[in-house]
Image (tube, rainbow, N blue to C red):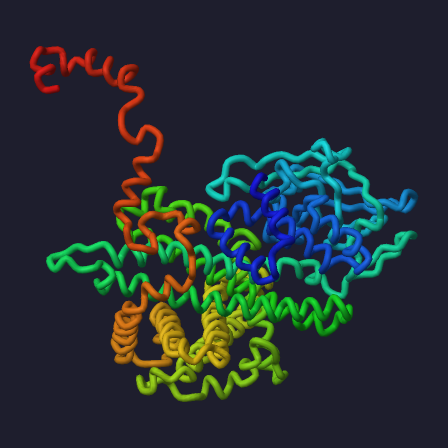
Length: 601
């Protein structure tokens, strides 16, 4: 919390750009610290902004910004996380007192994994099942005070820690139980739905509006992926540029397997970062304009599109990051197993990005549901818009010519390949679901029967979206940077073509004779980008004190600093327990009872 106090004092002195830079640097330097700020300044604050009225937001904004109150975000429960409709915490309206009674009805309804709740937060935004009379009216958000100024709990509130975690140890994830906690009617966030003094309920136009806060969290996860990977890849590339071995004593970065392992990760970091920033900019603009105008109908269309793409990207980019960190660890040999070189800590902290904000398997299915619905509409002759507008042309896309191996360097050819594969896989999912439903399956059983294929069907669409966003961004880039950015774009594309090559063959987009060509293009491009590998990771502009890994030092003096770091640790040299434990063992051990044993020692 000392870091939090310092950050709060520094923040007002920073320009908007400096604040962004500060957050990005601290995300790498201390991810638990940033998560504390994120929970308060993003999840808590933006829930009130997005779900509350202007009057409600104005009431709390100043106190949040000045940290006069500290907020957390109570959504998930011990027995319910991704399946939000199953949430058990209730908010029952009492017409006589004009209050809501917040109550944890069962053990599994305990709010769980709530960042900042274990020891710190004074308030929370809680997602609860609204009850008026005998009617259950769905999920709504409520502001609930948790602690008094002296740290004691508010009446009916109990909080505790969830205990030891795999990573992000500085964030006090906790649990919350409510025992008939009363809050004023005004504590229900009422931008999209309202409860009058008399208990008259105005319903949400769509339940998905309750989840809009999560969209920003999922898009921000793309930034988390790129930041954590950028730190790890910087260390591994710099180490590989210094480390030499083999008959010719060459840099290990010159070995082909090192290039084909690390260069695709560099390319993907740029692709994910560019896509995440663009998507967040667009979503913020959509959300801001909606909040200002309170226009619901157009927002419902927009939220469906952004929900789908943010869910799909969070899933696939999150999985990619986890796999890449293991590749990076192995590329550094035994040295990456040392905690002093930061890779282990990054891997431990990273795990939350594959489950926090929604389990990736569940998110991929949410993306799939939107793709299936859109494709079904297109098959019915309706015009599809938004990020899946190309579905409207599914017939002409499928009827188009397959790739014969020519013009492989043209971006439109590669983007067309992912568009074609997306249409092919999603349309087949629609056909299989329709077949199973016609055979008497329930929708749930039909979905589960095709679940793996549905999840897989979202990947080509997500690749298409990233490639298109990345390519569009080059139009406004510095001309001197466009050549290397194009190479990175092409390598990201080839990496995904290579990983999906079984699908391209299965759907007969190209013949097996084209596979060696794809692999050669991939290997050759990795070798080409290797010459720029060090400048590319230097471009992430991460100072040594942020990376915290002697093997990733900017000046290349890795072994001296690594050895110094190891020997600065307490008891690095010597055995403090020798006299107590080892000496008696040597004297008493039956193996060394002869006089000859003393000669051996």
